[in-house]
Image (cartoon, helix red, strand yellow):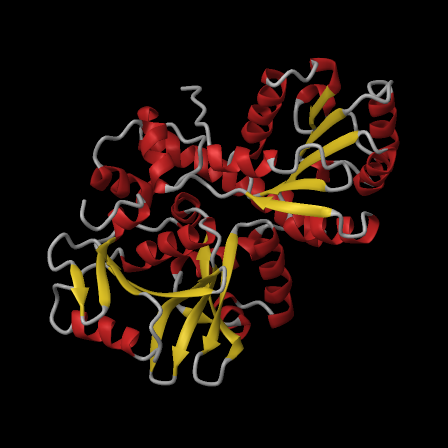
Length: 400
């Protein structure tokens, strides 16, 4: 299967910077989340609007023909042969981190004045720190996530949202998985992606070759998504030092393998940095990397899906701490706040009262929502909306 999904919202965000030659457009995200395809789609769109092909310079440094470009001098030589006039050029450089000294090349392109530059990369810290140093902050970041549930349904031609959700929780949303080839093949593919991220984006960043430590930390985090933890707890469970754990955690976050969600003391109005929750960018990688057996408790995977979806929708997300209770997510965007609890079902004894009670703690009028797999008992419960999580993910209105 060689099927590509048009992800229009990303194309529009990339296109918003077209013609701004003073600003580098930085497209980030974990490996195999679709950055290269988006760059190709943008190139195709440029051609459709009349840009001559020779004025589009597109390079993927992981492709065979360009793997020899290892440093800025070779890259400068390559580009100088193609930028031959004062006409506008569109320079699209994919997985730029593979080129030593790439940031100096970009600085030179910006100074030329006629180059509209777009880059992709799989390490957020490396890109942002080097760009800030050499480009004086003249860049915008467009973060690409794995497929949403809606995109997953379109990609794999589901007509039933519930069936799509089951497979989405199992295999995740990387665009490259081919469900028609069977579960074993999909898991082999995901294991390969995970190993590549560990080797190329985590170990290379910390300049270490032995993957055993990062795999031990990843197994612990993947088995404990949504649980409050800290470096000391991880060190105790893995037998590593806290400093080692901290180094690898930073590298794993920068490679978009795991996501840290800080707790927010809603009473004291301050961030709590000593304990956090960790989630995985893609649940398929979680299963492939940790040998987890599918179970009936889906609460944590559901929580993971909701967290990533809130980030995808542009929210800043924290865990809400209220002394003796906790709100799963406090999500803020454009000055507005929303509260979310995530629960597999509200049908068990005491669950509905417990989940809604936590949302009663914030003494404000911002929207409060419980997301569940339930299809019964939905609606407004004393000002708290009880919603089916599949409908919420697909952005269906409650009435539907």
